[in-house]
Image (cartoon, rainbow, N blue to C red; front, side, top):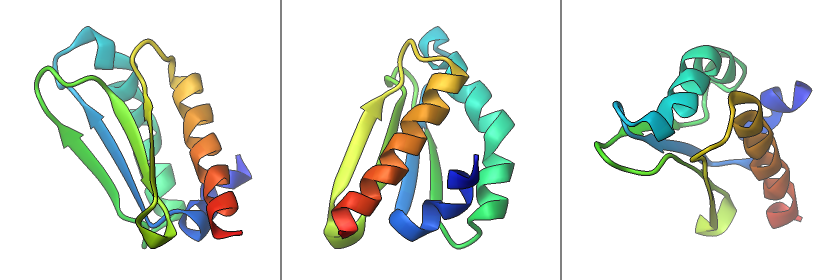
Length: 98
């Protein structure tokens, strides 16, 4: 999981949106509880925005250079799949830079 320490190289901002009560957001809530501290410790200057909104579908958004943004819907994904989606978004940032 060395890629976690490289997030701030490729991303300018990371946003996680989810519902605080919805069952479809339970994996997203668990992902945040179990991974936020590690992600923030390894990327202290990267803005990681956590947004709760009742009834919203869980989503993960990455902002890259030049205002380019990419998002992934997280509904139905497990914690491991959310981690893989974040890794894919981070690697996608290298392509935006290059």
